[in-house]
Length: 538
Image 1 (cartoon, rainbow, N blue to C red):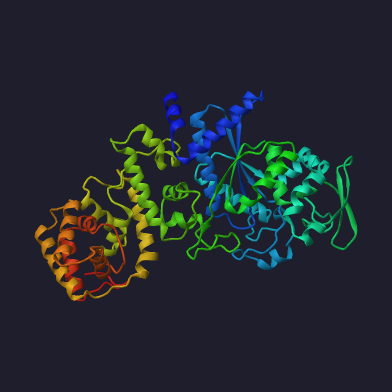
Image 2: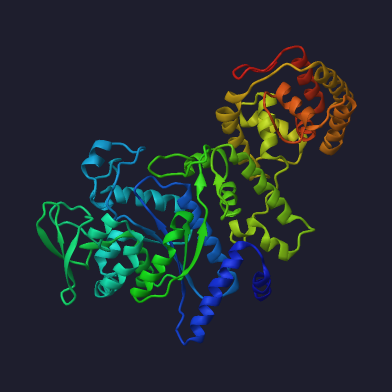
């Protein structure tokens, strides 16, 4: 373990870089004479809509930094998954049932609104259950915190009273960031109306430090006095973040780029509430296929369940791990690429040529918290998709028959990961590849080259399973028939034979499918026998 910690101190993977910043923070606290009993990580969740992939990404990335820190230090760590379920519902999400009921409850805390799905005691409780279910599914180590429960428990009371006592300081931080009209009524405290139950954006007209209360203007213009403690008020979201850091003693938090301009405000409020701002990490936001920000209320992008229908959890984790500070489109087309990149990283991790230092840089080490499965994938996901396409396979048994011909030692028992990929490939092909197929007839140049390739493959038969040797033949045919650049030749192969614009190395596909069978497929296409989406190939 000591050797591992020494290697981690020099590792360049971004979770280690973050962990070293956190370690320096802890060492500084120790030198200042402060007692350090543990390190607290926090992630936040806004449960106004269904949990989405961005929420998973935040918890996953924070967990990777936590594990990297645990590799460097033996100081105990803790992760809080905090749900802002005391927030008032400001608009009705587009993808939820019972919109009329939700409309009638606008402004109320999420935990005071009936569950539109009818399965939990409130809207907030339902969304919290959904959050916890998928965090548990992925095996995250965390403790769940409800904003409603934490405010009501009194855990925030001391920090809230400090905010009240320093009200003018808080206003001095916040007012310069607001428009002129908003400044007239702004208060960091949002009272929960004892009359309507709504979280009110109300004007505060008086404060009593000794009693710990505020007096505000109710919706009907009358005055109401409530304590700022015990869940009778909550803070506006920017002051709330800083107060929470102080009250809980948060050491590390991540947030999306949309929070970046508010980071200085969070820090200032945290100090006013008596705390020290945590180490922070900004990550870029995910975009949908059209380049628009993914939104819980709109329900655009991919849900976690949708990703896991077509790809393994490891591929989703890898997508989250790579370049967290780069905006990335998150839609169905990225799944096959993520799956094959995971396979490539796993192969590299287990390579005899890979050093221990290099393994710490490999994403799979972080994704699997240092315990990387000893799994092998003799066939890529892209090749499986093309194999399904070429063979018109509709069952696992048919697809496995092709795989075993290529890799005799492979089996569902010996390769459980590959067996899962078989199921994903069948579903992905059926839902995304098959409906989009568009075959075309070959040009005269392409026809001559295809006839040449078919003849060469027929001469090979199915005895050649060396994908590199088969790929060399494909290259030779393309060059011999004057394709320049050669990618035009490979594009023709996929467009004429498989109805796709691209694919994996064609030599690898032919070796897997069998050269004789590939030759037969070429002959069929040259005879005008194009495979239609709902038509089996003879």
